[in-house]
Length: 266
Image (spheres, rainbow, N blue to C red):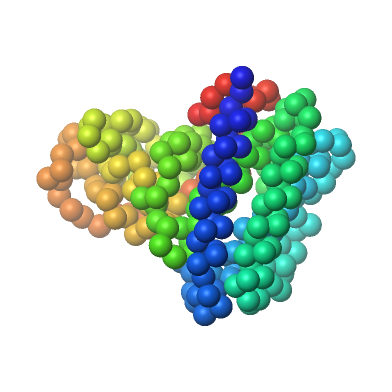
């Protein structure tokens, strides 16, 4: 047994939640701003739909062994989003539904051996095809929040938060860090994890979902506080301004992923 069935089930649930949100949006809602600067909700939905097809490209590469780029280029990706961002809500929902179905079919039909095949997005590193599922879950989970339509970081499932924090840590760039330590706190069990020696800057603490929201730019730091240097975190820690979050996930995948789909991830 590998992690593949778990990731596939999680992706199906995340996709259904996103589709439900998209189905609730009117044409006026689609034209309204999203949380992403310069993008309407229509831009976000268009990007997520086209991203599904881009992952079909990578699965085709894995299945055939023929290099099939995820996107032709950054410029082509941006132009494609602009071209259809302003379409009506019903068309967005149809595109999102159809592209998700194409991706689900490509996942279902991929031969077992092909999940270990090397593929690559617009940026390195090369990664095994099974990690495509993780990347797609990231797109759906983060951009669902970006719609600013009732789904927020508090709605992220625990496995999603745990995995994204794991990969954030695995891709950490110490030279560009704005914090020296991250303390992850479980609401009822105290400290869940400490990330030490991250670089220069203060230490910060917060619940996992709050920390992920801040690290990914999906919040201004609500629920994240500074930890006085050399002291343990306490709820009474002095509230001071947080630094800018460090660069998040500077690579689309960790560099040392196992080739064969692991039993669990992370």
